[in-house]
Amino acid sequence: MKPALLKTLAIVLIGALAFLLGWHLLHGGWENLKEDWTGNYRPRPSPTAAPLALGPDGYYWGVTEDSYAMPGYVYKMKADGSGWKRVHTFDRSPRAPAAIHPAGGLVSDGGDSMLGVTAGRGLPSVGSTLYKINVKTGAQMTLAEFTDTEGPNLGSEPNATLVPDGTGSFLGSTVGGGKGGRGTIFKFHPGTGVFSTVAEIPYTPHSRNVACGPKDALASGGMGCWWGTFSGGGLEECGAVFKVNASSGEVTTVVEFTEGKGGKYPMGGVVNDGQGFFWGACNGGGKGYGTLFKVNATTGALTTIVEFTGQGGTTLGALPEAALVSDGHEFLWGSTLAGGGDNAGTLFKVDITSGALTTLVEFDEKESHHKGHHPNAPLVSDGHGSFLGTTTYGGKKDAGTIFKIDIATGVLTTLVELGKVGP
Image (tube, rainbow, N blue to C red):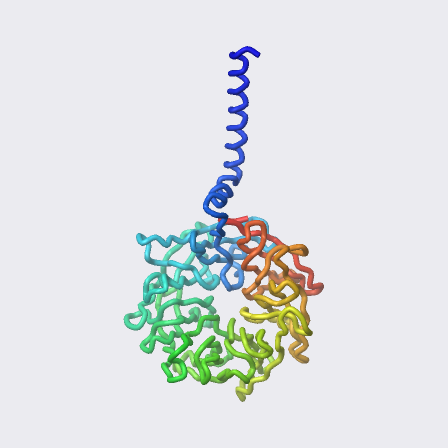
């Protein structure tokens, strides 16, 4: 073969390879190449331990946490998983100290924005904020910066989703800050921009070793009374259930968990069952895998309802962390972070009357039945007979998934598999 022809063929071959390589990199290969080059690490943010929230635009809004290599972001989607869009990415550079490390979920402010919190850098009053996202433009605005133990906005490291108090304000909590450094309860009015401290969690001898600031959303008990949980502190440092009077700021401990009493380390807050009880979950205790409990709202009496049994036994599941959610009938629904056959978490429902638990889904890391594993966020109704939820891991990029589960049949459908910046 003549040298000129060989040269021409080589040029054509190189050109074709360059085209194919360019096409591959343009269509996602570049991200895979970078990840493989750097050791195949997992730099993708996963959903926060908070429920999706319906916005005024008809979309469901969610938040991802920071990963060690990437900042978290706000996203939205329709109830069927279509129309997924990354709306805002948080800036955690030193040039932008406000609104760092997103935590909790979002809630509609009743207007054209969604409200949320950032927990900050882990340092007092650095990046701990209240913010809003405009649903039309996606613009993010910081509404208040927490000032730790002194100043106008007491508190630091808010982690819980805000809840409307019925008067136009929203209630929230912080893990740290306040005069005793044990956390605060606060309220914020988005219309006026007024921030006020409702209560400062008192320092007690029983809270000296474990941070006992509330980190989960509050639940209304009526008459201006709100209920919540401390994951630590209490008589044996096993956590507690408390209530706070939103008018007087008085904080009352209702139940102190101990090694032999109804589990330990309550997570996710509590939910009112409408029958005089508040239900919640403990991350530990029982048979060693956590429990479900209820507290009599009048007497404060604690009853252990379920003791989880891990990967086997009659009540599959371990390490429940999410708040329970009512289906509007006779069941409360929830999840466990671990347990089930593959130790990858479960979805369950519990009968409010009998206390009987039904395991609906056992996740598996092999994803042979469905995508995603290790759920730790509360479910939320889609208004069409299903609950929406998220998993922390799994899916095609191992950044978690968004799913729906049919309330009538218990059938789970994966809607979105999250990636580095989306599906």
